[in-house]
Amino acid sequence: MPGKKLKIRLTRSLIGLSPKQEATVRALGLRRMRQAVAHDDTPTIRGMIAKVPHVLEVSHEA
Image (cartoon, rainbow, N blue to C red):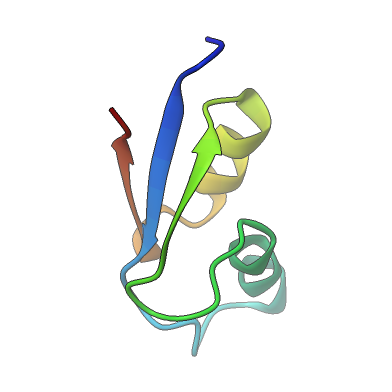
């Protein structure tokens, strides 16, 4: 999947997340609500997204 990108947006607050979940969101590069980042579509990033799907919105970047 080279060249494929995912756009990841933080849709909910980090307040109330477990420390591990909060660390995962921060490792994705998200700090504030409604902030968006782009990452390559890799198994590592997919695994991180799978740990906190309830606070993220994921879409494919063109």
